[in-house]
Image 1 (tube, rainbow over the protein chains, first blue to last red):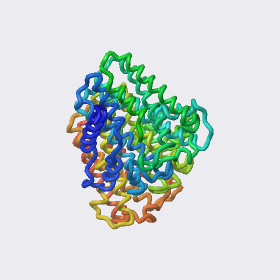
Image 2: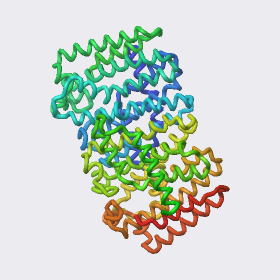
Image 3: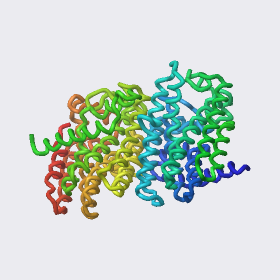
Image 4: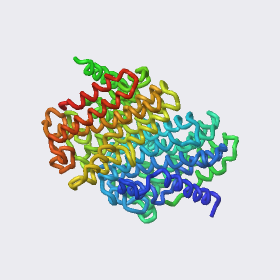
Length: 295
Length: 295
């Protein structure tokens, strides 16, 4: 196992422990609601966003116990968005993280409520995190809400994406959609690690630029994988962008040019890291990992 | 206009002003998303929960500018829950607050996202409320999330309610459902006013008991109105509890007994107020108002 692989494995283990303590057990009523949340949350997700919280926090010297809950919270917000994105009225998807989607397993009404309450539990968890000062809790809630919300966050991006379906859109528009839909949450994961570590303002800005590039890189490789990998490997329906006539980096640039673009963005992310006077090899390895990921 | 009527009218005006500033304008992208939020939020709701924040806060001496944002936030959470409750997969309702429901007007996907992001904006608004200390902001977020969440909050109640549909349930169960589904948010509205006013712990507890009774009273009169009023008067579909074979206070007790129960609960709410060494006539007038409301 490479150093990065063991870092990811340890992250997943720690974050799952946190999530376990933050979500009511499925023996407590309403049992179906809690089972539905757990079904989607403990489905072997990559835990990429939590790993980013932990890696950036570690880079700037924060203790792990200060970072863990926020790492889990970022995953809760991400998972709530997946549950709602998969609904029949949205992407209408049957498969996620290698298993049935939440609404396929628990019904649509319960899936809507499971997503709703995951968001609630996420903000509650930050507010009640006694490892953090009041000022940091409030800053994290504000930053995470901005990244998850509107007009420049995840839900705004999801709406713009829906409206763009089946329509020809410009590259600038595609970038704006992704910046909101996936970039903002990836960025805030990285920023949260730096905020908790009480990094300097300039360091937080540099990390934001690194994370913006990493988020974009993540999206381009996502589009590449959707176009080139099988459903079996991905654990979610492959090839659906093309079928939905979605504008993607692959549909707009073609495979080869999208790959080159990914390499350039990767180089920019690593360039940002050179501005930081810390040991940043973990963060550059994460950028390498995303460039080369196969699922 | 009675004193209470002018209090409610002034509340609605002030709260609408706050909401206006907290929701992005519908000229900003994604326009449809912001228009959908505004459609549901500015539909002439009674603003009962915000009024409770303001009335309790005033009773304990808090300045209005400290209360207003939290009052608006409680209404945002309430409205997000109405948007999602009306969805085809949930209550499948066409009419709300006298106009088309959000998904009828804007489509299901946008309605899901509008509800999602209203919740996000609500927590963001508390976190960024510079009129309140960090400690109070964190306490409010924790309390509101608990009341909106699971296992004892609004979403838990909604799930229990869904599961009870078409089944015979006990009175104890019905009370638990309502305590979660509507009682918790009404209760936290009242508690929030007392928390912002920095009332004593015993006062906050007494206000919670008052609010629990007021919440129950609200639910019983809701059931009575659903059974006895027209759709036109209510501005939402009347008689739907009976059609959905929902357990209600009316179906379990009958009209007359449900009315007497409402009177008893009203008396208990007023009894609580006598324990508070403050001028509480505004709060008892609110209890009177709910007992006697006609829509």
